[in-house]
Structure formats: C-alpha cells, structure tokens
Image 1 (cartoon, one colour):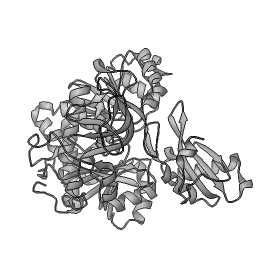
Image 2: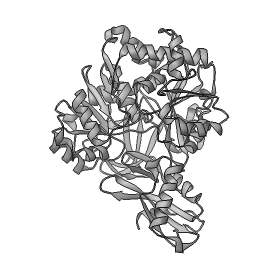
Image 3: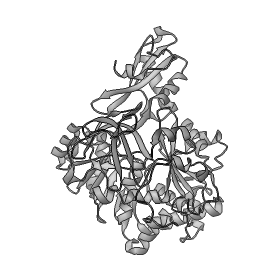
Image 4: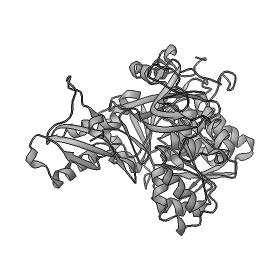
Length: 537
C-alpha cells in the first residue's frame, strides 16, 4: 500500500490479507501514487474549462460543474470543521438520486472520508447492520429518508451524528444551513491511490449484506474501461436512468461516467416508466442506464413520447431476455447494450458496443479485463462448455473483514461471480444461470435467506424457504414456501399479512410476491434446506 492519508485506519486494517486479493492487471503506472478521485473527476474538470457547462439536470434546476464543486467544497468544510471528520472515517449517505446526494459524495471524498452510500428504501434493521459493519461515524441524510435512519441510529453506538439536508425549512444544524458559513474553496486531502474511497454493500446468499471495498484508483479505472471501450460517449451526451447512486451500476452510469468526459446527467428522485420517458423528451437525453425489467415496462408508452435524442441504452442488473432486446429495437431502433458487472468488481466487465452486439449474448470481455469459463477445480473449459465465470482486471473483490467469503469469491487470483456461463468460439459470453441462491428480480439482488430470516420472526411461521420463481415481467420473483405453526390459518388474509410484515422490516422490493403454504420442506439428512428442490418443484 502507498503511504496512506487516512488517520483513521479502520478501512485499511479491515482489508483482506494481500495474498487473498485478486490479481489486478493494468494498474501499476497508470494512476499516480497520490490520487483523490474527487480531484480528478470534479476539480480538474472545472480547471480544464468545464466550469460553466451543465452537469446535473434536476426537476428543480441545473447545476454546472462549478456549482457542484462549490457545494462539495462547503460540505467538506462542514465535515472537517463542524463534525471533526478524520481522513479514513466512514460517512453514510442516504437519499434518492439528487444533486445534493452527488455533492455529499464528493464532499466526503474531498475531506478524505470513505463513502458508504445506501439505497433510500432500506429499513432501520438493514441500516443498523451497515452502520455496525462499516463502523460508520457520521451520516448525511435527505429529510425524506430520515425516519428509518433515526431508528437505526438509536441502536447504533458507532453513529454519533446525522446531518439532514432538504428539510422544507432548514434548521440551524442541518447540512444545507451549515454550509452557508463556509468558503467556496477547499484543499482536498491528498489520499493515496489505494486508500479506500467507498464501501459498497451488496446482498449475499447467507442473508447478510457483503461489504466491498474500493480504492480511489478503482473509481477512475471503471471510468476508463466500459465507457471508453464500449459505450463511447462524448461531452455533449445527456445521461439518464433509474439505478440509485447507492448501487455501483447507478454510481458509474449516472454520475462518474458522464463527469469523466465533461458530459451531463439527469438525476430523478423517483421515476415511473412514463416519467422517465417524459424526462428523456424534456431534457433530450442521449444515453440511458436501467434494467431489462424497466425497458420492458417502458415499451407500452414509448410511442407517446419524442425520444429521438436517445442514442444508446445500457441494460444490466439482471439477464437481458432476447424478446426484450428485440422489442426495444423494434420500438426505438436502438440496440440494447447488455452487460454484467458486480458490486465486488465495481462495474461492468463483459459487454459489447453497438456494432459488435450479438443478440442473446452478454458480450465480450471489456478491454482491460480478462474472463474465462472454468470447472469446479478452476480448470479452463473448452469453448462451448458451461462452467463458472472467472474474471480479473483493474478492479476486483476485497471484502471488509470477511476472510471466509474472500476465499470463496477470489480463487487463484480470479474473481468468481457466482454465474454459470459458456463462451463461444468467437469470444462471446452467454449467461446460463445463477450458481448461488441469489434472486435477481427487476434488476435488484435479493438474498433468499434474508427474506427467510424476516418471515421466521413472524409468530405464525414455523419454517420457510425462499427461492426465485420465473416471471415473464420481472425475470424472477421472490417465492416463499411456508410451514405454519397452525396449518388451518393458511389463506389469502395470512398471505397479505406476511407480505406486509416483510415490507415493514426490510426494503419493500424484497417481499415474497408468491407464497405457498406447505406441510414440510425438503431437507438433507443433516437438516440443511434443499432450495434447489423448491425451485424445481
């Protein structure tokens, strides 16, 4: 590790042993030893002539590159002077996609902090886990999302202070009130290129969220990989889409990628299919990032809006079905750019540009990365064989304080994504199935065991198993098989009660859309639940 600027060493000490890291390629010499990604993505763009160019389009107005810089600088002052933030300390960010959330993200990195950006739909019990796992010291939260965080903070001794922004009438201690007393200029902390910049949480098959750690150089590496070689945007592009900035898919596609080239982006706090189409028309969006499910949902209304400005569409978060690809192409004339990424890898590493798209295939490996299909012994398989996907490149998996999971995900220097693929003779990768118990529904990753844990806390539930069930609209839905303490209680009323219970305990998108009451669950002789038997009926 280069000489770190972090005074709080928690993040660096929580990294896995170096021998368990994936082999990183094309890194040495590409980025300087001293690197703050906020400097490169924001300050340097302003000093290079982009100060007055539009950056963030929002329903309440436009922020230029200079506007974002000023807000981020003032937020950094608040963090350092009013909150005594030390470089290396973790700051939880909570809010819908907005200019303020973007400013908070850059303010934290400028001050040398570590961003822990969360989705606004998470409930207090999920936030409590994140706060404890990352030992979060401070939170910046949108007023619209503060209630669940208040409950989480009451049970979280690590979280000392929460600053709110966006209150209809700001109070004296709110973030948007505190910034008014601070300077527009800020001297960014000179972090090392391998200081941790973000901790991203992603659901795991054990039901506990996995915390992945990425460096300042990693942030720039994803900007210089998929966008440069596959998407190929330019400074006049207007990005748009639906993934939250708390997902690395959204962070890259809706904030980092446009900033790297001086382009602009549209940030919407909420968007139905028609609202996104309307915004595309209003702001003349040219590039869209969203899930296959959302592209399918827009098909019914796409003819009602003038979206002739749209040039490129990126699909990720779940498998892109061929019928969706074909329907979108017929409706818009645009070939969907499919891609596979992972929070562990930070962003997309297999995809194909428009002229190389092979419908039905995920694509080819993005330049800078390497990928192969292997058997359970890590031996590369012949082309056309189905096996496990292994990948390596300028980014890779580093779990926070989780050596056992690190050993599972990284083997022999390669990252194993948990996906089954085949690679054809031309180098295209074709998705076959998930190799674990993750449920991917409408682009969201949902861990079956997490839903099981919530259901089991309901007094009516004796046993349960949660799996993915195929669905033509969402790809898959969450289905729960439940054994009741009192079998006579089974019925529609209890189904709704259990669904509402799950929605109240964890993010609503994780609730079981289908529930089947059964008398027993399939188990091994040692008592382990056989989820594959539930999936296969």
